[in-house]
Image 1 (cartoon, rainbow, N blue to C red):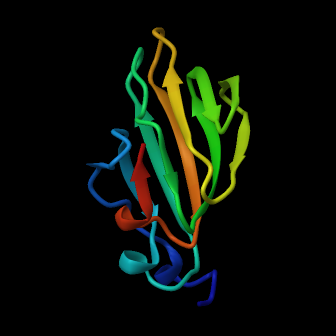
Image 2 (image 1 turned 30 degrees about the horizontal axis):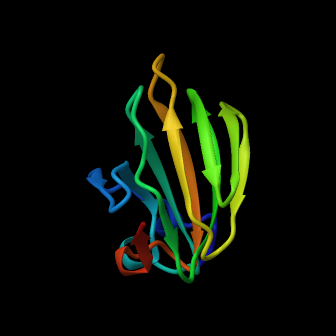
Length: 123
């Protein structure tokens, strides 16, 4: 796909709720937007809430925090996250995020292979 082509520009899909409880808006997913071996979505976790603890069997993820702050649980680790932070999540590792009470946590989520509901196990 030619990156300068209009065909490589995607319109985000309607937001939906994933198994982990976050609101997701797919920005790029090959099932809907064309070629590619990864997906990119914007996740929103309302202020003062958390996603469900879950893992992906096949997919690895990169989270990039766009807005807000909170706490990341990744395996046995627990650490603070804030706008500008980027976190790698290997396949099979249990994880969840907690948004601070002050503002929603907005995260860009890149998955490879692309996100699939059937690859998500809620723990």
